[in-house]
Length: 355
Picture 1 (spheres, rainbow, N blue to C red):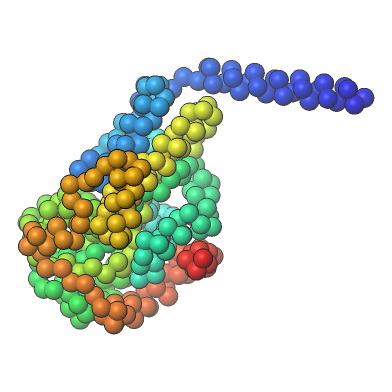
Picture 2 (picture 1 turned 135 degrees about the vertical axis):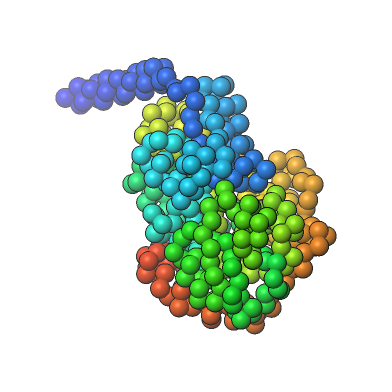
């Protein structure tokens, strides 16, 4: 009897191996897989997306071709629709911001809670801790397979009206913001006038003076040459802007296991490079050393803050007391949005940050 059971298990295992090999052998990829990216290849975000595509192409021997479509062109410029498009399968891949999915995936507002995260160390603990696992699992239930983290960066304030050091300095400023409810709440609480603009329209808005200012990470400020439109910057790390490297779940399941491994490892490598590139000079040379030691690269601009100063911007570095004044001013927004995000996600994030 025992021999029969063992023989049966061997037969089943053999059938499984044959089926697996057959599935991989019979796999026929699409001629091209689409990827949506909200910015273009001049940004660290776009460079990271292109790197992922290039690594997939190279390591699959050209079997899997992923083509990035810049500026949310597959979404007609409507950046907030990316997660629905990937979930339903009209777009295959994406390298996108959690801000642009936060209206649909409420837990993604975790990263937009005002002054909640504040440091790269805390952000990494959340992304690679229990909270990150929960966020990835939640997306998979939506038919979006998240593979790796990237980063747009901590968002800083720029404007062409006055230096901002206090909440009172915000009053009356017309600021371009991402079209999400939590942004409206934050800036209205500070007395500013939040103006909704998709990124595809934002630079034109700066050129035409349609707004007084905006908020974005340095990885965005440099490529758009923000000093040509705004004189003042305030470094306040008021919220984080992570990126997700994702693929439609049904597309993911169609890939053989060896190709899945290649795509995931390529996403992780591209995400690591992209994070280091946008953080360079902002984290005590940690990211500069990653670029040098792991990727053999030395970027032309090593200190992004020093660079915008050389271009004529006045950069305000808030004292601890000044930063606390902003935290206190936006506490009602924080309290409200903890419930919107989900107390379980916020609790998990606090535990991760405490480790």
